[in-house]
Image (cartoon, rainbow, N blue to C red):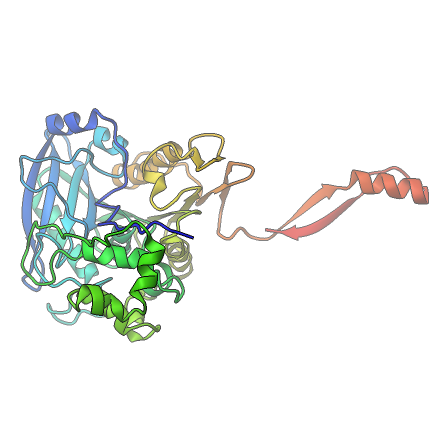
Amino acid sequence: MKRTLVITFCFILSAFSSFAQSDAAYIKDNYTKYEYQIPMRDGKKLFTSVYVPKDQSKKYPIMMDRTPYSVAPYGTDKYKAGLGPSSQFVHDGYIFVYQDVRGRWMSEGIYEEMTPELEQHKTNKDVDEGTDTYDTIDWLIKNLPNNNGKVGVWGISYPGFYSTTALLSRHPALAAVSPQAPIADLYRDDAFHNGAFMLVANFGFYPGFTNRQDDKPTQRRAQGFDPGTNDGYKFFMDMGSMRNSNAKYYKDTIRLWNEMMDHPNYDQHWKDRNVLLHLHDIKTPTLVTGGWYDAEDLYGAINTYKVLVKNNPATPVYFAMGPWVHGGWARGNGDHLGDVSFDGPTGPMYREKIEFAFFSHYLKGTPLDIANINTFETGVNQWKTYKQWPPRRRKRTFTCCRMVNFLSARQQLPKTITKSSYQTR
């Protein structure tokens, strides 16, 4: 059997959103772009693009996306075609912030895969994504005119991890966060999938992801890897053992690849990259989003929600799971997957009724009427709401008309409907 070798630079740049064609022109007409190097407590500076509404007659909340995938395009005269999680945000009015995380693209510092988070920060040299987020928010609130003092953070996949770590900043201005398909434990839900190494996905990813390995900012893109064939099965059979990934191809030039080769088991290296261990004392309202058909980070979405709810019972935590692939809720109608129909659009409903409503409420004070849990049940193709996940066990009754009629005929029982109860989720 032949399989296509999929080589990707990264199919998520900063957001998965599908924007209307008119948004690009609207953004240029209604937003002004600025670029800053925001200082962190250890002296490193992180490159940050900011889009501010031209209408300065009112104050706006800040929506921020921190990403390792570049905030491009660079230059104050070059604009993104879309801003925020969806088109609704663009037209409603927000200050949009995009930041290259530490060690990536135009930001200073050395990049670490899923930066280990620290429980204590005793000196200014004790930095992680939580402190970087805190310092960024603090600078934005104090330096961007016409902000209303509230910040929201969102991100999908790897930016979903940075959204989760934003919660660890515990900055008082952080008012709402939405980790979407977040990497939570690199060994269990992204690179290894409970210990099973995702060879094709990782082999294709890291050459394109690795555009720099030093502390020097750059806009240079990586060249990626050309396998010279579309026959992925034959390519990996010919490659042989994992040792040959370096002996034949990478030549020990990709540090992040070597880290995975050096740590095939769940050792301290991976334990340090489990952000779930740090999700306590969280006060920020959170919306966790994922897709039932997400082959990349299904574990991350489900377990991020579970841990947040367990460790922070007084904090508003919402959960949305729909019939989507990785990031599928942010683009398109979501009315089908392959040949399977879901009897209507699921993406627009989520973007407007859940995501937009969530951020609008906590950042602008609009009414909020969404359930704690919104999950799409395939088969019946309906959205179901619950107060907790998994749903609490409950008693349900059903009528056994055929069995009652059968017993009545055989045993001459009265033809009355009896009820039997059973336990189900």
